[in-house]
Structure formats: structure tokens, C-alpha cells
Amino acid sequence: MGNLLLKKKPTPNESFHTEAIILGEPQSGKTLILYEITGGDFIKEDKAVESNQFICKSIKLSSEFELSIWDCCGPRTFHSYHKNVLRSKALSLIIYVIDTSDLNSIQVSKRNLWNLLDNPEYNQVFFLIYGSKCDVKNSLNTTGLRDYVEWKKLLKKRSNVHLQICSVIEQCGVKEGFEKFVEYFLDEDERTPKTGFVIYETEISKKS
Image (cartoon, rainbow, N blue to C red; front, side):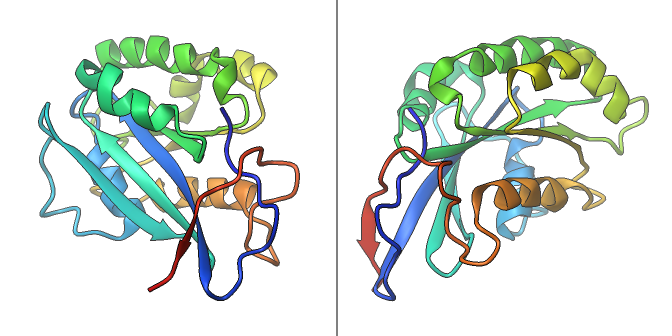
């Protein structure tokens, strides 16, 4: 398990593709964050993804590179849609959303998040952890959420991780957090994956 290996640079007639999955407890704000990242109409899409549904949205990371983000429903389907995406050789990003206004949800999220972090198959996958609903009264701030997820312990385990407090309603934090992944993944000048980061070759799709 890993991400991508670019054995050659894409030509003007080729585009390279990588994948991400967005996980978290039901009603944590996963779908709203997906639409904020990809520029969709998140206000009209303000509804939970039902148990038999999934959404996939794509975003251009550069002129040659496209990222598809899969949003499946909560843990109930972890053994179906989730596993298919998590097994993908093109997986480069796991987005984990934690509802900072719900302490019970935070505890469950912490356990599920660490199960993923402890899996060596995802050692080279970037983890973007969003603390959602920071606009809600009594929600945890950055320091509080870091304490709950054992941030210092987490950083000793891996460096390819970022935690970002956010609010889709107030339109803050989501895009700033996603940019941390883009900075990590892409070379600043060539806008292709950085040398040494990737270990699998993507499928190449011809542009129409």
C-alpha cells in the first residue's frame, strides 16, 4: 500500500490520477468538507450520506494531476466501499473528520483514527485530520483536540499528518488544511508528486 510512482512525467496528452477517502463518524461534517474542498455547492448538499450511498468528487491539483475524493457513509459500510478505496494503490490521502462538539464522537473517532495510523499499509499516506464544527458552542479548540487524539504521541509515529480546526458554516480552516496536503504531495515548481514520496505507478488516462 502506498501512493504512486511516476516513472515519467505526464505529457500534454496525459493526466495522472490519485485518490483520497474521507472518513469519520456520521454527521461529523464529512460531506460538507468534501464540497468545500472541491468547490461544490455545500449549502444545498447539507444532508447526511445515507447508508447505501457514496459521493466521489474530483479536484485538479495541477494541470497534469487530478485527485478523486471518496465520501462514503459512516463505519457501517467500512467493510465495503471503505475497504475498496483503502486498498487502492493510488491512495495518497486519508481525511479524517472529528466532530469537536461531541465528546462521545471524539472518543470513537480517536479509536478508529489510531487503528488506521497503526496500520503499516498507510505509512506513506498523508493523514489530514479535521476538527469540524469549531463554530459550535463548547467545541474543542486546537489544543483540546490535540490532547484528545494524543498529538505528541502521533507526531512521534509519523510526520505526514496535519490537524486543522475548521468550520464549513464560517468557511474557515478547510481549504487551509487541504493546502498542507498539496504542499506535502506536490513539487512546488513542477506541480507533480515529489521524488521519493510515491511508490506505485498510477494508471494513465488520456484526456478527451
